[in-house]
Amino acid sequence: MSLQSFFLKQAAKWKMKDMPAAQREQFIAMFEKNPELFKKIGEEIERRKKGGENEMKASIEVMKKYRAELAGLMQR
Image: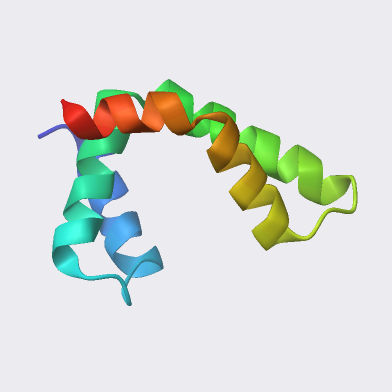
């Protein structure tokens, strides 16, 4: 396990502490498969928030946009 992977898991556990452990592990595994996709998603959400959009609405719209890529990661 790389140092980056270790810190990612620790941050995910802290940020997603209310999420069930199985879902949290699934999310971490998806992130490890394609970190660039999640970086792109995060940047797009931030851009929308700075444009005045509500965080929840921005997150939902961006996730819809990348639905196919996320589904592909879940299948692997």
